[in-house]
Amino acid sequence: MELFGVDAFSPSQITEKVRTIGVTKAQLPLLAMAMLGIAGGGFISLGAIFSAVVGSDPTLAFGISHVLSGIVFCLGLILVIVAGAELFTGNNFLVMAWADGKISTAQITKNWVVVYLSNALGAFGMVAIVYFSGFADSHDGAVANYYVALAAKKTGLSFSEAFFRGILCNLLVCLAVWLASAGRTVTDKILALIFPVSAFIAAGFEHCVANMFFIPMGILYSNADNLITWAGLFHNLLPVTLGNIVGGSIMVATFYYVIYVHSMKRTELK
Image 1: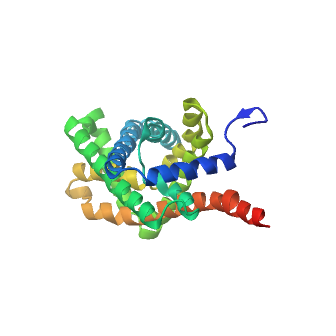
Image 2: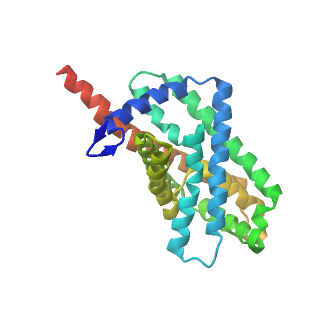
Image 3: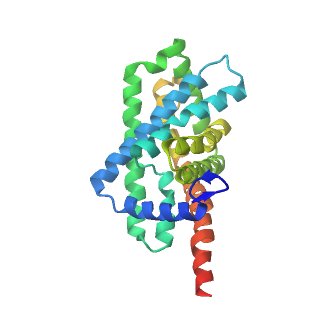
């Protein structure tokens, strides 16, 4: 529907698209779901690799470095949306189809668990590939130092800090997916997601799948002076994952469901 010269889907049309896609995602065969999840973890890792090139440059000012890192990190979500993959944070939108009774609790639980674990597998696989490629030794080891510093910062967050940064992150990520769903062309989708995604990276918010790449990279290059452990990874992932669920499934999916589905049904009943 074209409104005021803007050829984009309306919020109510986006809601219907997201609910329909949610049903399709929940009904994917297990193998396809897992393979797409592995791709999702790998795609986000590619965005993380790209962002490290910018973030590791010490000549850039703080603001410029963070904003540019965020912009190039968008590669990950662009690949997920355009090329096709399953991403745990974006799949928080399945709450819409679940709330509408179109998928069961078992189906949404299965999707979240399978996609989360396969995202981790994709990210860990990319960690191994990048490590053995020697990429982190680039720029006299500046990239490796960047990964170590970033991982140390992430694992040093308190539970509450990681949780609330997780909320803010997936609020922005799911809004990026929402805006991309309004687009009718690939160009529309890419342009729509750039600002929300780059904002969460620039602000230093926490994304569980991205951290499945960033923190292990830091672990591999840490030493006795900046020891980062696998326990630190799980210390980060638990609150960040919970925060991501709140930010995506409640603050975006449930919010728009109440507005465009629940309230409309109540109006029709009257």
